[in-house]
Amino acid sequence: MQPPEREGAKTLLTAPPITETAADRRTGRDHRNDRRSSAHDDDDPQDRLMAAGGPVVVVGAGLGGLAAAMRLAGTGREVIVVEAADVPGGCCGTAVLGEHRVDTGPSVLTMPGVLADTFAAAGQDMERWLPLRRLDPYYRLTFHDGSRLDVVAGADAMEDQVRALCGPAEAARYRRFRGLLGEMFAAEWDAFIDSDMTRLRALARPYALARLTALGGFRRLDRLVRRHLTDERLIRAHTFQSLYVGRSPQRALGVYAVIAHMDTVGGVYFPREGGMHAVPRAMAAAAEKAGAVFRYGVRATRIETDGAGVRAVRLDTGERIAARHAVVACDLVGAHGAGGDGLLPEEAADWRLRRPRFSPSCLVAHFALDRRPDGQAHHTLHFGREWRATFAALEAGAPQPDPSLLVTCPEYHGPDDHGPGGAGPAVLSVLEPTANLTGGAGWAALTPRLVNRMLDRLSGLGYGDLSATPRLVFDPPAWRRRGHSAGTPFALDARFTQTAWFRPSGAARRVPGLHFAGMYTAPGVGVPPVLISGRLAAERILESTP
Image 1 (cartoon, rainbow, N blue to C red):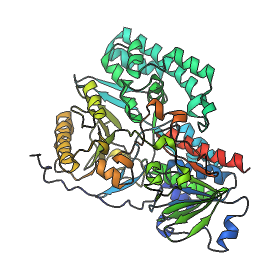
Image 2: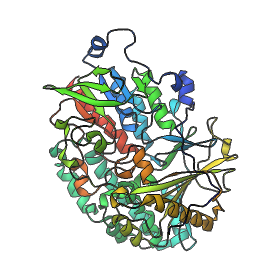
Image 3: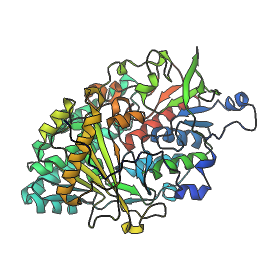
Image 4: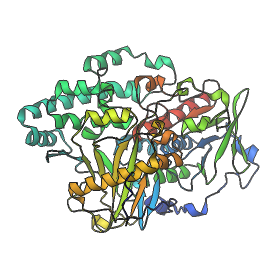
C-alpha cells in the first residue's frame, strides 16, 4: 500500500491571477478589461485584416509567440495574437498559492541580450519595461558530503571558489575548461543556435562543424567534461544542465556544454519586480505599444488553407480571421491532434513528429513561507548521492531513486511582490526531475509518495518541517492538464535526431505562410532559444512579404 500524502497541508489549485506590473502601470493596461478585445471594432473585418499585405495571426502568447509579435509589429505589420488564457505567458505562466503569486514556468533566465534585442526590434528599451538584476550567486551547489560551491560572476572570482573547494590544480584545470566553453559557444552560436534550420543546407557549415569536432562537441558530454576536470563535484556542476534539454550527461552530446557556458559564465538574471511572469507581461505590453492586438480568453481552433497556403484562422467564438500568415506558438503535438482534428491542417504534418521522443518531466512543489530563510540563495541545487542511477531511472520511465533538487526562493524587490527586500513572506519552489507520462506510472498513488519523500529530504537539508505548510504541487498529470503533451513542460528531448534541422521545422513546407515558434522547433528549449524561434518565424514572414 502506498503511503498517504501527509495531512495538514492543503494543496491549492487556482486560476492564474490578474496582477499589475511595472509595464502595465506605464501603459495604463488592465488585462481584466480586454479579455475579448477585438481587432475589428470600427471597420469591416475582412477589409481591415487583408490590408497592407495582410495581417499575421500569432496563436499563443508564450515567449515564442510574443517574440514574433513584437518583431512583426515593430516593422509596422498588422499582428493579432490569439491566446486561450486570460493573460500572456504560455509556459512562462503564473498561479496563486494563498496570498502568493508563483511562477509556474522557467526560473532560470540567461543571455538577457537576446531579450533586450527583442524589445529593441519593437522600438523599445528593455530596461524601461523590464529591469533585470544579475543574481549573486548565480547558483549555490551543495553536495552530499556537506561541501558547497557558489557559482559567481567573473573568471577570477570563480577560480577562487573552485580553488577553495577542489584545490589549486583543479582550479587551473577549471580555468582552461572555462576557456573551452567560450570557444565552443563561439563556434555554435552564429552557425547553429542563432540560425534558421528550416532547410537541410543550413547544416552545411564545414568550418563550424570541424571546429566543434576539434573541441569535442560530438563526444558525449560526460566524457568531454571528464577529459578536462577531475573533481566529481565540479563535473556535476558542468553536466547537470543536460537535463534542461531532456538528456543525461552520458547521452547528451558535448555541444550542449554551451548551456553551462550560458549560466555559469554568462550569468543568471531575474526581473527586479513581478517574478518571471513579468517577462511575458512586459513583452505583451511592448508589442501592444508597437501596434499588436491581443485576444485573450479566445482559442484558435483551426488554421484554414487554400491552394495558396494559409487563408484564415478560425476561433472558438465562431469568428474567422482572414490572414495569409500564421505563427503557431504552442504545443505542436497537441496542435496536430489526432485524425486531422487538431488546430493544424493535415498538409502541415511534419515527419519529424511521427515518433516524438519527449523529455522527462518534473514534480514541482511551491511552499508558502512566513519568511524567507536566512542566507538562502535565489537558486540552490542540492545534488543527491547517486548520479548515474538517477538518469538511468529517468530513461526507464521511472522516478529517480536519489534525485537532485533545485530549490528556488526569490528575493522580491517590488510592489507586486510580498516582502520588499526579501524581509516578508516568501515562496519556496522545489523541482525534482521525474518521468513523463509515456512510462505509464500510476501517478495518483505515486505523487503523494514522491511529495512525502521530498518533504523528508527538505527537512534533512535544513528547511524544517514543511508538511503543514500550504503548497501547490504540479506533477506530470497536472502538466498535461495545462496543455503539455506527455505531461512534460520540456517538450522534445535534444537527441541528435531531434536537433537543428532534425527538430520539427519552423515552417510548414506544404503550407505557405504557416510558421512555428516555441520549444518544439529549433533551436529548442529554454528562454533564449524560444525567443530566437520567434525571431526566425518573423524574419521568414518579412522575407516572403517585404
